[in-house]
Length: 101
Image (cartoon, rainbow, N blue to C red; front, side, top):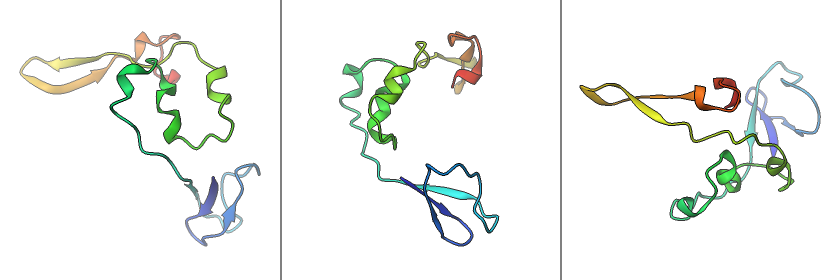
């Protein structure tokens, strides 16, 4: 993975702590990701890390080390007359907060 400045197209390493380019431009992450195998998802553990293959982690052990059972909060309908209008119940997260996401 590398960061590319959206203003001058200069490449930067994510290992170097910077939030913007020397020219003042913002970074865009450039990485290769695998397609998600949606057929395999029902067999996988129901947590945020089931999508790990599509994320740009270089160390495969990293995300598995940190978890509190977050993820898979329910969707509830907000209005019975509008069944497609749903809200995510993030208060079901371990800390009762949307900030777990």
